Length: 337
Image (cartoon, rainbow, N blue to C red):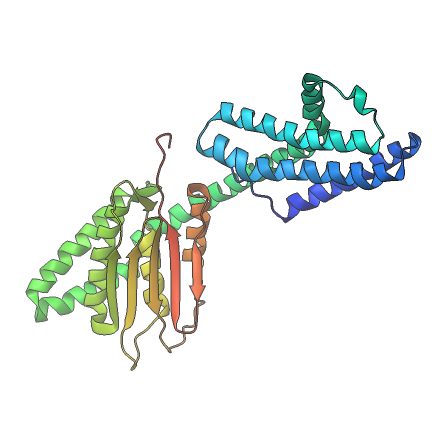
């Protein structure tokens, strides 16, 4: 669950607080409260309840509910936060209302009143936000699920793409006459690729080591077909075990490079696949030959959609005049996944 606030969340908060402030001003007016109470009590209550919401949405829930599943810690720290801000608000209200300090509540009554002081204001907005986040998450889930079905169909079609097979058969035909040893290697790599595509057609994620092995075979086909047009390099900067990627993600990134870059007189297209602790990055130099197709196609869009279900991190794309860089998060599955 993504508890970070977006623009519509802030709009909801503003509307709720605006209505609440209007009703509070009307209530203060009927009770003939002093001007200082208008200027301090109402803004302070709004600020403190908003601070409580931010702490819950950005720290407590993500840390102790979503990630660690430590519900006792969540309740404990939640009570402390409510009492802390409530105590300040209560003391401030007692002062602005000219309360008799000799009759100030005892510590247990003070704690109780501090807890309830802001729980209503913050709890009401908090409940609205959680309900909104839940229905937004459900809508996003079904949307991504539908997109995933479309992606599966597209992936299946790409696996048996007649153009892919036709191009590889042409390359193989040329190799048989010129280099039989390399032709045998080409057949072996091509069979490994098709075996991998068939075996993983129903898998949402695959081990990083398996995807890298697939990438090495796929790169071999590209380099054999295009000669020196592309210069690939895989840099391993972390261990590959216990790490996963969306199935076919590296294929998407490599296809994107070849699809939108053709070697020119300036030299080959340099492509680096860098494997770091949390990210896999594919960065390539860009050719001067303009492609009729847009540089950000459906392949990358589909990959971004798939990551919405797999990770809190998003696909990062940097496009400059000379280089194109795509970084995808490496997924580390929890024990409950």
